[in-house]
Length: 112
Image (cartoon, rainbow, N blue to C red; front, side):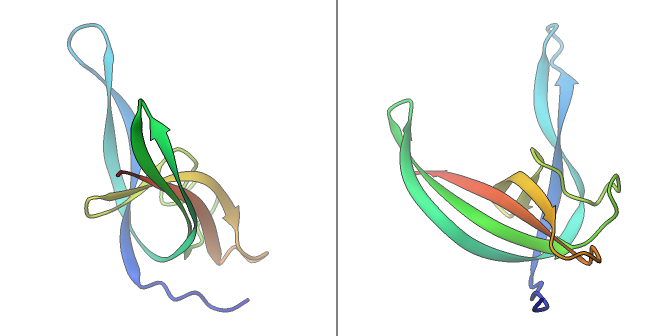
């Protein structure tokens, strides 16, 4: 396996439900920490959501490994933030048998 070039800092965020004061809940994102990552674009497409065009791009994001259950190990439905950009994690897999690196498959959606 070729050693990845971890050259981007991404903030790992977890969705949290917070009471909205009216008996319901609001989803907010809690930062869990900053991880160095290698971000590689994969495929993209354009779709429509409520009649508005949406650009959907998939990425392969590689970070350093962490044990299962560790708070800094990414999980599906969490997201990475890079400034105003958000990468929603779809799936997570160990890159090698030693668990040195983790590959996250993520999607970024942007209104066109």
